[in-house]
Image 1 (cartoon, rainbow, N blue to C red):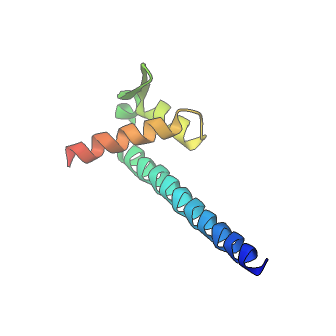
Image 2: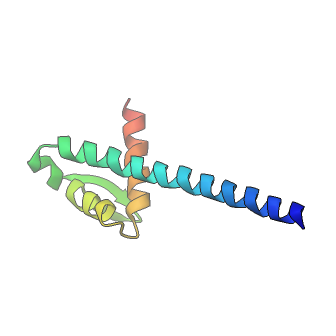
Length: 88
């Protein structure tokens, strides 16, 4: 029985570690997008930034999706990060 408890403890720690890694990656992504958005001139924020699931999002709309954790937030973040990585 002691072995079973030890396995559950290890499993719990691994799940906690994985959750922390995923959560930090998400937060960092959100912060990266926020930094990009804040550097844009106000007029440019109204320009198209990305197309996700056939819908065009302006920078402003994309930020609102991400800031408010709406359903397309992760897809928008991934697409913007893909674009910015390709530009470097």
